[in-house]
Amino acid sequence: MRVVIAEDLALLRDGLVRLLSAHGFQVVEAVDNGPSLLMALLRHRPDVAVIDVRLPPTFTDEGLQTALEARRRLPGLPVLILSQYVEQLYARELLSDRSGGVGYLLKDRVGDVEQFVEAVRRVAAGGTAMDAEVISQLLTRRVRDEPLGALTPKEREVLSMMAEGLSNAAIAARLFVTDKAIGKHTNNIFAKLGLPPSEDQNRRVMAVLAYLEAEPG
Amino acid sequence: MFEPVVGLLVNAATGLAAWPLLVLLGIYAGLTHLTGLDRRPLDRLLGMVHTLAGFQHGRAVRVLDRHGAGPYRPDGIRREVGWLAVHSVAGPACLILLAAFPAAADVIWNVRVVEPDRPISLTFTLSLLALMIAGWMTASYLHTAQARLAHLMLGCEPSLAERVRELTESRAAAVDTLAAELRRIERDLHDGAQARLIAMRMSLGMIKGEKDPDRMRELAGEAWESAGQALADLRHVVRGIHPPVLADRGLAGAIQATALLCPVPVEVDIVLPARPAAPVESAMYFAAAEALTNVAKHSGAGQAWVRLRHSAGMLRLTVGDDGRGGADPARGTGLDGIRSRLSAFDGRLKLDSPPEGSTELTMELPCVL
Image (cartoon, rainbow over all chains, first blue to last red; front, side, top):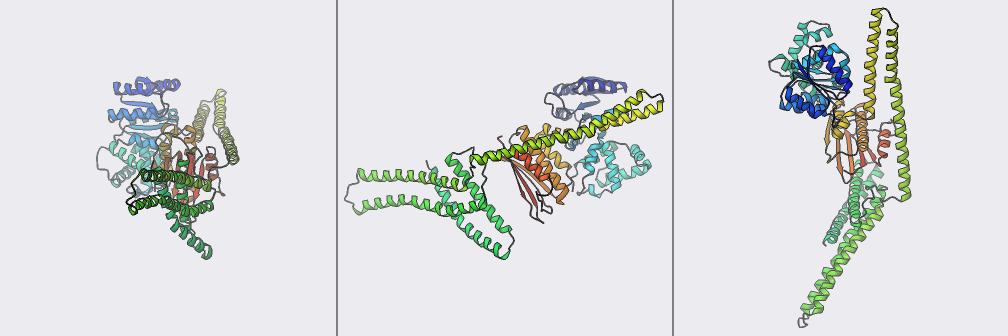
């Protein structure tokens, strides 16, 4: 699997290159600023890009902006954004083109190597990987509007785990129930959100987006 | 050239408008005082007086070219009502005075008709010309005089001593705020990240002397856990110093991001021509965040709104909600915190929170964009 890495701190950049190489990824280029990142993404069209949100020259959200720009030019290009902090605003922007293949994780999560590598693979496969902190920010809100308000508390819990990017099997394991029970919940969720039967991965992205975009009430 | 005449016309119009306002004010003040009527209609009338006074003061400042005197801040509503009473007479009176000139011209014209055999001479043309010049001079003199009157009566240019006292106070508040902030950061680091790092070092130290592989794995897990918590703590501290989203996206983005996290739905309406200076941005952001926290904690509201505009050298932020009202700056430190943050930049906080009514917080900061 071919990957492009963007991180301006050499220590972390080298760490990421080593970590991903050790897990069978081929790092085709590792860059340290926004403009080089855009060029690298357009040139290599990698299977996935791992990008630090804050990059030179502006040292603001250059990484995010570049990722969004690259996805405008190459729709569906899988990107995983790493950040020292998470903003729900940014999560929404990443998901807003509705084509999936996006991740948004705290940098700390890199420390949990297995889960991090799993998240990179999931994003490369067109799935989502939203940080648990984005999700927990959402849980403090009351949901008023339809159709999200129609979900049962259990279904909302399952949806929040779907947003993190967990598979049905992983959700089942976390909730100590059978895969079949989770399958029933996810089908209910898709039906209540009015998502037509289609490829499961795509429906999951749409459901997560509905979740992130819900107005609190 | 026509500016004084137009000005006098506007003054006359506002002066006439003052009449019904004064009458209503008298009636409502009496009723409110005698029968204990709801204060709100009276407050609304006083608000109109204030708006009118602000408008006229703005014009006076322009006419007298006294820019840089700072925003309009009257000493009190009594002064404004007093000015309104004077203006209601002076405004129309000046126009009547000016009307004497066309009247005089008319008389001269008629003299010509009454004595048709008198030659239409140079004197006749000259007297009309003289009248025109005198009229124009009088108009501009009256115009300036009215501006002076408004400026004097609304007396919003504080004396130098007053200004020095105000600045001394706001500087003290700024220093206090800064010191308190530094203490808070120190405490957060001490109790948070620092403590976690010590715990981590302890775990690592124990690993060094440990022989049992299972125990080593357990200790490594603890160290790993502590490192994660240290990172979370640092993130929290950084957010409190300068939220990264503020650096990334400016006030509009940062307030939007905060509104997204508010449990009450918030309507955000921000229009800014440019980014204010970083310290002003920061003060305004924390004020908005604090106000939204108050909405979430105390208001019991179903809907809130944030509005940010820049006009006439002033950044104006309004945060409102349809909750239970009755916010009191004397209780709780949130509003005090906002006030002292704003005062460091010569800003102001206005609270409108009647019991059982919607609350609106208006924060103003002078700021050049």
